[in-house]
Length: 456
Ligand SMILES: Nc1nc2c(ncn2[C@@H]2O[C@H](COP(=O)(O)OP(=O)(O)OP(=O)(O)O)[C@@H](O)[C@H]2O)c(=O)[nH]1
Ligand SMILES: [Mg+2]
Image (tube, rainbow, N blue to C red; front, top):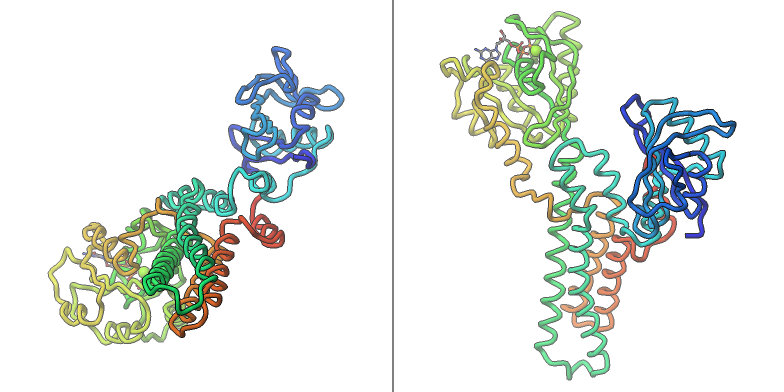
């Protein structure tokens, strides 16, 4: 609460209907009163929390800069826990910059990246996982990612962690009670209880760690390559998925040369698609370059949509593609399902556990592709509202806690003293406290907020 009042533009630095300059700190009202004059004559200093007033922003030499609305959030019932003033003016690059400059000339300090959220954290309005969720909400590219981030922002992850911690606290208190007993007097049932407690916490942590991988798929998407022999319909599939004519389609084999890229959402999963040249042996030097880059893309892909022309018998090139995909997650797309089937479907099914018959021309089969994708990625049971680990920092702490509990179990089965187990349980608890930010070094907090944008 003693910190200097900060100011920043909180909306995007782009032309827009409304732009917001935000102030936070004990002098927010005073600074606002120096630059904003309300029509009614009411001053921010007298306004109640959650009220607004209409007026205009003026420069130091009395020039009117813009009409504006001032919103007041009084401490402690504000985002940061301090007095917060938001001045909404016209959006765009110039006006918001001018209003900010006046706020700075009137005594505010420019806010650093994420400084508003940092103050919210330091003032106990939110914990560290909720602070991190703010960035995740802003950068979410799909519904699932947004819902997952919002749930974390509402404290769903912290609740999950808290539950695990409660169990561990109970264990720790039993352990300290037993510490006074000689080993041989501790009843067996209590050792069993200890074993069970460790096991439950471990299971819950493992589940939590799994949620990180699934969440990452929704957040970051997958580098996906559409590959296959020429004329199979790769570019037609690309266009079906993007919803517009992204790639050139012709009836001639060898149409696509360059890699054509676009990100789409399929079943909520962002696929960073690359449509590639049809793979075949060719004398054409330009096509050769395209074929080589298609092969390279396959090597680094996280997912390949392997397109086969279902209306033709499988060719040598098809068999080669099958071979090259043995170690890459792939979905076989047996295309041109609107035409009579000629390809050897049983062979394809044998080679590809995930397969879909589809017509890129009519769009028939696209739901099945979505289903197969979810199946392959095991995202069917993803419940974004559950509270998932959503940053690498959180994952590391959860992993640390899990490892500490594994050590604890080991100590128990080796018949070591309860003290040894106690140390492990305490290590797990401290890793979880770091995760939620309850006990965390300033360096880590700095690192978390470094990634924020200014104005948040
Ligand atoms: N009947 C039918 N024709 C299709 C289908 N998909 C693609 N085609 C046709 O197949 C031909 C080749 O399609 P493209 O999408 O250009 O094939 P490609 O795999 O990108 O070909 P290259 O870029 O040469 O490697 C075009 O004439 C398409 O209209 C389909 O599902 N059904
Ligand atoms: Mg093509």
